[in-house]
Length: 230
Image (tube, rainbow, N blue to C red; front, side):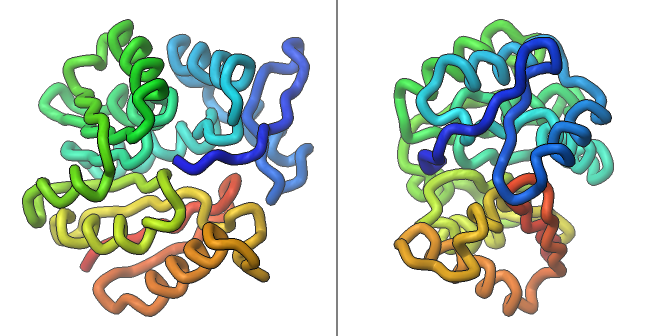
């Protein structure tokens, strides 16, 4: 995951939620409060990330976490690749709703983040369904077989999104899904002036033009590009 500026925080009485800048704060808070709470361990990861890490805006959070779980349940995904672990929220959220034979491979290049995430995984009953691999995501992805993956969640280095996408399309079975986070990239895609913003704008155009897939651009939090391989 790429470092992002710290997210705003609500007071404890109202709950601690991760907010972005693309949707009105009142709407984000309302959405979080009207979304089914996550498990106690995921809520603990959220609180820990928002209060103890330098870049809390990198957290997936309740609304997007519940969205990921819903997609996993609706799609019946069993073999999931999570690109960008951070403190483990997205991987654990998806693992919690998998059938017993399902698996989540989550990839993290930062050893400190991986250690934090593994500590949370080890406390979860979903631990047997999660494999955490530390290293360069592209190197790991290139070792995975063709057409055997059901779902890929991309939330890592922005400059590599297009490369992640091509690997994901190779790995996915027909009908498999890609969910790409930060597709709006704080609105910077509309007038990209830095390398990350240009990379995200180029990624969105790559997906838009790809006739191998159907796409739905969602304005959930910082934008999620939902892609279904033909």
